[in-house]
Amino acid sequence: MKPISFILVVIAIGAAAFGGYYFAKHQHGGHAGSDQSSGRKILFYQSSMHPWIKSDKPGKCTICGMDLVPVYEGEKGFESKAGTVALGSNSIQVINVQTTPAEMKPLTRSFRFAGTIEDDDTRHRILSAYVKGRIDKLFVNYIGAEVTEGQPLATIYSPMLLAAEREYVGLARSAKGNEDAQRLLNAAKLRLVQYGLNDKQIAALKDKSPEDIDTEILAPMTGTVVARKVYAGQYVMDGEMLFELADFSTMWLQFDAYEQDLAWLKVGQQVEITTPSVPNKVFKAAITFIDPNLNMMTRSTKVRVEIPNPVIETDGVRQRELSHRLYAEARVNVDSAPVLVVPRSAVLMAESGKALLYVDAGGGAYEQRTVKLGRAADDVWEILGGIKESDKVVTQGNLLIDAQAQLNMSAAGHDHSEHGMTMNKGVMPALPALTAEQETALNDFLGVVDAITATLSADDLKGFNQQTMKTHTATPALGKAFAADSPWRKYVDPIEKSGHLAEAKDIAAARKVFHPFSMAVADLAQQALKTNPKTNAKVFKCPMVEDAVPGAPKEGFWIQTKLPLRNPYFGSEMLECGTEVKP
Image 1 (tube, rainbow, N blue to C red):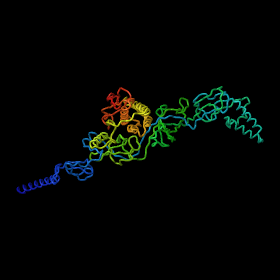
Image 2 (cartoon, rainbow, N blue to C red):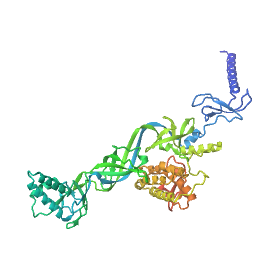
Image 3 (cartoon, helix red, strand yellow):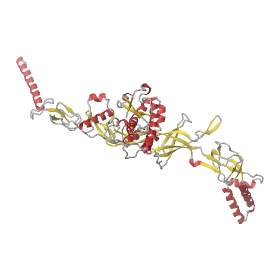
Image 4 (cartoon, rainbow, N blue to C red):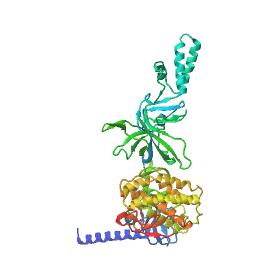
């Protein structure tokens, strides 16, 4: 190529490049600048379908692919839906936002119940005197004796019974072929039956010696003597209790289940039973009965499990493996059919009592959704409405997103009274004073919470799991004291929703379970202290709970009934970290 031709080609390429740049700049206004055709300045470009997607130059929406629309000076652009929070990539990383898709899966729930092992109530007998007389001899004179049906327990001398026996023997000798005597014989036999003799005893009367004036009292069933109310030489009246027998071959474990637990429990479900009297052994049995009648005071009902109780021999001594009236704990592991679920950490409880969560809307935006909750499993909530399968819900960082959503709505003038967490919410309408019943119920409940808090501050996992059992009684009792239309319900409802604390496998898990429950309790206590100085609680605040409970906000609250301050979130690591929050 000649030099002159090469120079011309270079000039042509440069001119074309400059022309393209000039055309693009004037056609689209360059970066956010001005529209030459209208003379208006372009502030930015925005997606009409996804308003949080913005750019300083033309392009496509990163979610739906539609062209970005220019927004001119003096225009507001497209507003995001109330409750939607848009975050930059740096912010998402800083607050460590994590999401997981809602999915269909079975609910798994573990229940722990405390109960008492009783004997089979259908095989429990009280043996009373059928006729008045004197106890001449005892064959069984101690409680705990194992007896078999028909075994002699004692002998009784009764003139009335002895006369009836001799009358029967005399009639038996003369009744052959005599119909009138036979009728009298049948009547005499019936009288002996009424006096407690069985057929075998009556048949043996013909061989009884005339000098033998006593009659044996026989065991009516095979079982264990659980009570003895008579001694040799004692005179008894007819109807007076002599012995009490129980059949220990099958034992009944009975425990209280609250009405919110009944959706999970069914006859035939397997139960794992442990008792301190038989360490390192788990008994497995099935639920056989659920009482349809609820206790109106506690809103609970009795559940029965039948446990085989064999005789074991230890050092030559034979006895039943399970004793009568033992304390025992029952664990019920339940699996449901697949339902729509999200992790429990995704769900936040609003002041109004509504449940909400945040869904990843794409492009760094998170949309607030109000959802309808179903059953609470160990790690997940059943969702009955508000989201669909595969929606990505925020499981970590949602508390900070929710705080930003409230700030956004406040700045925009939206009413956000139904959203957000309740602690530190500012000025609220005055609450009515607690009634005497409510004050008593609240202080009793705070005492239970204080004991749970003390176990965490002492790093006592075993104590925590033992004390949380008390919430299964204390929480319903608290709820019962506050009517459904009471203004206090907005503080009681979150406690009832989180107040049945699950067993924790380690101390970190215990503090994670404790955190939302403690926040709700502290909120209620803080409000109670404003109107009821007699409330037995002090509220404390830790400024760095997020280090102990991942995903929690910086500040965490708890209650104690007395000083000194003991931090349950850190325990011995930082026992005195925190300050008291005055009402």
